Length: 184
Image 1 (cartoon, one colour):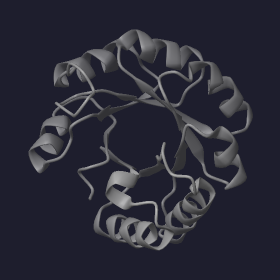
Image 2 (tube, helix red, strand yellow; image 1 turned 60 degrees about the horizontal axis):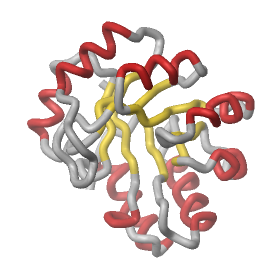
Image 3 (cartoon, helix red, strand yellow; image 1 turned 90 degrees about the vertical axis):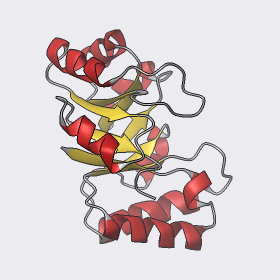
Image 4 (cartoon, one colour; image 1 turned 60 degrees about the vertical axis):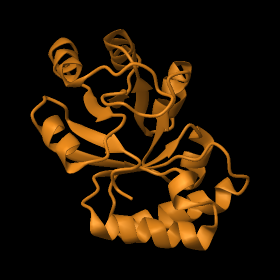
């Protein structure tokens, strides 16, 4: 099972030095297979993304993703991009740029669409209760998605904050789990 870390300024701050220290500590404490810089509010994205990519490379993270910003992923030589559920029309642009593409999905139909458009993986959410994310899909829905859609990575996401959550995801067919809060 793959571990997918997603950052958020609420937990990492947008102060570059504090952000870098927090990220370094998290990456050294946990085995991380994928790491995504996610920040929808800060005005110093360039500085934070540069810090993020440099630290991930220094600590041998092999799958470095930038959330939403294809051009910044290219500029800072990230491995890929994690698109939002409103960015399906940008999958081709990201793939044409040679990026690994992850996209947020909230239904099996969206996962099928992501695969048909060439995405490499999806996060499927919310698996557990999480603030402001609506009704949960539950663990069995992960298995159903893996049975109905092959050839694409499916990561459980949403409300994953405890070791018990991780253990329950291990009992599914998910390729991995993604979380912001579990790792900090």
